[in-house]
Image (tube, rainbow, N blue to C red):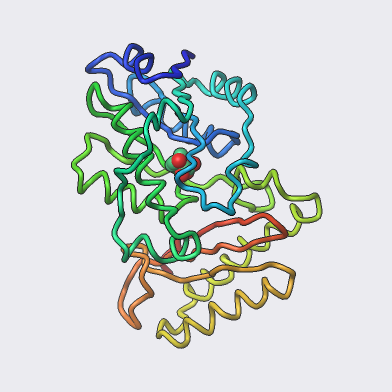
Length: 286
Ligand code: PAF
């Protein structure tokens, strides 16, 4: 594996015409990231991973400084997973001047769910992803793999890539789960041992919601609101602070239409102690 800390080094490693298969990350890699890397490998000529903790996507009170940085372990894991090029710029390299040009994703998709509770988050995500894609795919088209764990992020990036005609095929990677069902996340490392045992309850609450929808729950707005509120109350009763548990359409993350066939996804975000966890499940059609 070769490491590029600068854009110039990256360009030297990625020769024109090479088809990169790219996985952007913020480091502190776990089995979920490595699964994305393994998924990416056969999709290109050279597998590229970036590690960059992007200040632009953290709100002032969020955990930018505390975000785990585990460089040596990340490098060892990437090497073992078959990564060819690791792009690890520092802030001065990626943002040599204040990043005043930013991508403003459409409010109807970006200002709900995660974007509602973390205003500006998706501006930061889309801006850095556009920049990383323009660095990695400067020499020609290729593939980028994003995890479904960040469902709304994946949808916004798909839209951005399509509308800006970026020379990138976006591929989705399934969420990896621990044996109890907890979705793997870098933030799981913040959980105390008792919180770690409790943490699976978020995915269980989403499973219960998904099951209710699959069993033909009333999709009308007030029935849905009741179902979602009940799910949030059950988590709150266990000591969580839920931001949202929501049943939405896969196509646009809006509330379901009261009737008619539509693919659905249930999404949730909740704080357990000081750790905010997110998860989602696509509802399989009955
Ligand atoms: O999903 C992430 O880890 C980040 O949002 C990403 C896509 C690497 C952009 O910083």
